[in-house]
Image (cartoon, rainbow, N blue to C red):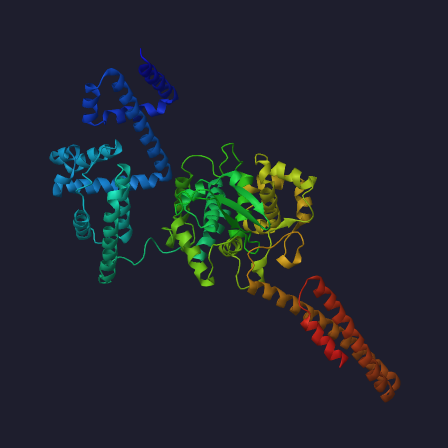
Length: 584
């Protein structure tokens, strides 16, 4: 054996040893698809060069398979299924109307029935058999197909045509013909715009509803859903409620919520952060982890995400898989539970009327609210504002600055023991999240007591059965941003900060009015007594005393107000004005 053959043999051995068993079937399939000219050239070459050529071709095929595997990882299963379905319909049409553009394997299905032909074409696509002659394929062929689609199915939305455009691009990409697709895609974009205008110009009696998807889920429906699922004594609805509330607050797709990992969750300042390493709108090379803020809503516990997460972890223990919602097909589990909840005959009419609700509708509703406030997701402060808005906090009220329920003081041994007892399987990195979830459940105990039956499964959880509950209840606290030194409030817009200052000034004014009223009542009683004892002389003496005492009292009140407002770093204009009036 010469040096060249030895080198080839070593290379083959390394390639075979690094090859994993699950890839064998794909490699065999790829080998059977080698062009015929490669086999002929291999037989014509000497043995040494034939072996080397085989190894090079095999390595090239393995590289293509790896690239394909990486790309398929960027496509959701639903997208792959949708592309395959749309392409199989297009190819079935081309068998009858454009057979000269197809390869021999696809043209041979012309003698099959429609069902058998579609099945064979789907199998050929699955095996990645080249379907068309890409150099001959033009946009005019697709336009003809789209026109026939519009005639047969006039109720199709523009999203169906955009999906076909994406499927065509994907088939060009699979066979390395993206350079030929650029001009075709530009022409297809014009075609899709023309289709959109055509659909918009149809008479209102025959066209479908404008826009894409269903109507956004109303906030009242969302709140009623969360309340009814909390009342219902079934553990599956605790899961469904948590899934819905987190998806609403994250404004994410149901598949993204299913992929949330425990190590992607953390507590920062006054909110919980969840990092999304994968987003449908950002699948390129610049893909980055995108933190999203989730805020508590202590004013409305039915839709509070921190409270919902606490109840979820009291019911379902965290698993070793590292996923927030462990198991397979949690998205389908959520959809099934949600539909069962909304179609129950004993549920309120608002739920039965919205039985077609979906997470897509929820995401549209939250997103529809944000343009009213002219926000853009460019920085963490804006993310926090969006998080507070999605949590349902009233944006034109001081309650928008509510902090999450929390335990007073630092996280001591009592709090740590309660976290380990109630959430024993949570990792230590989630202690901040666990602490605030536990505080929210304790804080809303009275609300749960009014809402739930005495035989509800939540009452049998570790928290409510242990003696530490009363200790925790005495320490739990909830306040606004300006009343706490522990938290740095985030996402507070300027107008809410002004509302907080105005509210503080109003409270100080109310205090002044109460004290003045108290003094007035006291001096009126003193005046009556002086009249009984000394007549008119007492009245004159009363007037002198009341003037001096009132001036002194006003000065004391103004000084106290000034000191309080200085401590809070607020403007002193109101107090200075009152002081100037008194000294005049």
